[in-house]
Image (cartoon, rainbow, N blue to C red):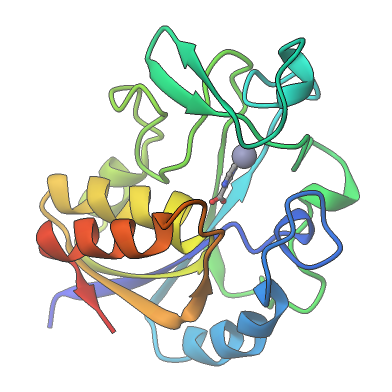
Length: 199
Ligand code: VGL
Ligand code: ZN
């Protein structure tokens, strides 16, 4: 069988309850993911990793509040509370997440002027993170995605993986979403339409 990787997206303190961008039930998926890891040959983690003055932070846009949008050179960008700042507790993985099996930790969002939801491309959808090359070079053609947030970093990763031709499954019980104005249903539909298996 083609080799398959479990890609665990952004299971970090700031995306769990009590965190700066806490997602309801974010911590509930940790034991599920830990157990899943045992079923995969390859485990890859992603880590949202922003400089303190990152342009996706509402705090960098006078007069703007979190969850409003701004126009960036690469298109529309949603603004967030300051989160996952490099080197802070909020940017660390949830303390119960097992990280020993990870063969690669891919950090993203470290360029001040551009956000990066996807594990594959920054939000201009053209600057690669290198993950596609890593997977291809290692003969991995199938990925399963789990993590936070279903409707942002997980969904963008799934869509980009499909556009690269990978076979993609998203395990909803191992994901939690932010769900802004119906974004969860909308992104699940988009992922399905793009040929992602949603389980
Ligand atoms: C994420 C918003 C901002 C995510 C990251 O992991 O889905 N969402 N940064
Ligand atoms: Zn972020």
